[in-house]
Image (cartoon, one colour):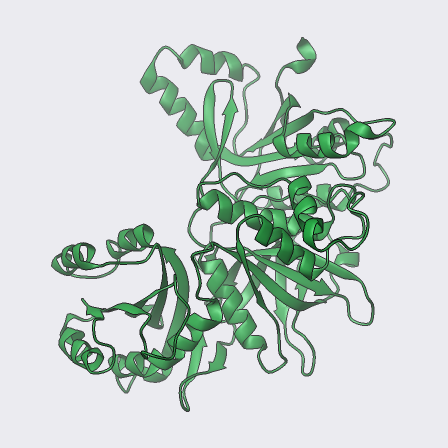
Length: 509
């Protein structure tokens, strides 16, 4: 039974490589070429913001996602791999060799046990499931994102993945990542399953397996053999897989002059906690790829960027803070890979990988974006572009509230929010407590609400809430608007008068 016991290793390059190599049962020693995904994990976890110190090795781990792959494909091979995996857990602290005894010793004292669990929870960075596949070892992976800079945005926190270790329940937070195996799923399968996992888990469901995504994709639009899946998925197949999973795909394409609009729409979805599948291609070839955008970093004092600007109502321009980084789950690398957004005249926008630490020269060439696909909860019927159109129409209101000195610096930050989450957000806004108490009692919101937030610099100016469960209709004008919440109490009366004559029934509070 000793081989089934948890073991503890320091986090070093040699130890991480050995852990993954042994777990995937590699037949080569990797001394000449460590797989890119393993080198990336080493670089990512070594960053000062995570600073991994220890690895806990959990052998004989049954992973639901790999088990589905095994049953649907590998079990019928002449020489099938094992059906169990190894799960690696990463901590920011050293682990004692008698961790199991330490936890058991604290079990009789509730306060001591909770203190011990909280200590390891604070140091817990997440896990990597290593599949017994030498060609594609990195399975389901959930790691903590870097959080040291407030200009990074990953949307609202998703429900944690509960991890049971030695009687403790720890929580891992992050968007699920895994490497394609080219048998059950290709890069597009990994991208679609990861994006769907995030939104489905937030809505209380169970994340789909790669096997299910491949089967869904080929059910209505087959392009050849379902398995092996090395040929990948077409755009229509990705859309079909999202639809078959019960979600609604919103496809946004670049249009040369509209690249800023594509970026602004993607930022809105990411700010909403909705990962975006990006279909990519290499210029001059037919080579395609798919990744998941999971977050971004806005312009800040350390690294400024030009504003994102799109035409709005009349002669006005809708502005948002520019981005300096796009964080992407790329199965050729790993989770939260840093990408630079690039725009060239007469070309589709491109992204290029910016490595930290470990060099990846073969993966740093720009790849172009042919489309972005957001998997939406079915009752979100407004698209990001619909919300941006409405934001452009309402921009004159925000400019008037900003006043002549600040009106040209008005920025927009749109997002979709669950009604309950937005009500909780109200408690954190710089509003008089009496206004907040009145608002939380009077607001009648749809399950999902479009929030159009206007700012001047870092100062909040105005929130406009719209019904996201219906399409944007020209008549009645602004019929989707549910409520308008200005920051200044002095503006309540003039704003109420303004909307009373244009969109009766809007709550101004």
